[in-house]
Image 1 (cartoon, rainbow, N blue to C red):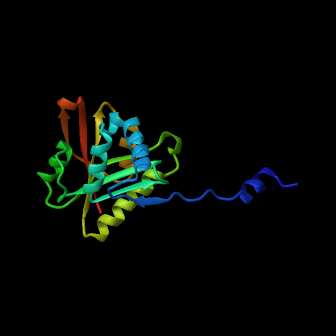
Image 2 (image 1 turned 90 degrees about the vertical axis):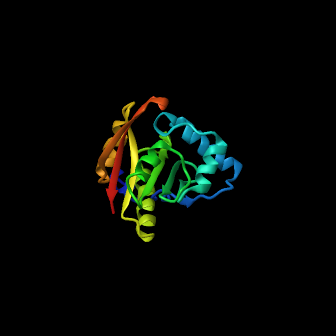
Image 3 (image 1 turned 135 degrees about the horizontal axis):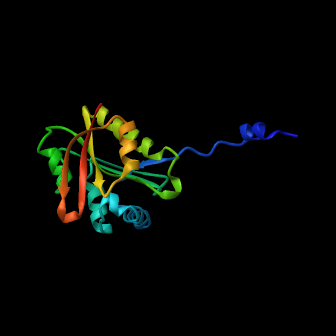
Length: 178
């Protein structure tokens, strides 16, 4: 008979997550799943229509999903044609950067390290293209303590703040040198 600790050692490891780069056009079923994921976390990310999400992904420096929709990252660089006030804040201050517009993991997959793996994908792409910094924003109003702690662990530091009254948010602007 096998003891419980030995049985745990013999259990097969789950398959590692698959991170897939996205480009437009996006398969309608995949887009619907990514849109649901975005909308489920719209308070932290900002709401987008399916058309706007596909347009954002299509124009992004990098967009990737985990296991076909359990996580999403959308990243711009300084050349992206994008009118987000947060992106424009960075564009007014830095000549060259990689901006994480949104990163999200489904509630069912939280705690598996997927957001870290998505960020590792961003960091690797940015380094490969000669970027020296990655920037993003995290809400302070409404508060997002989980995201604050996560970004602190990744080495991001606050470089500014803004109140987006039209969106009912206050944001902290963060930067990580590569």
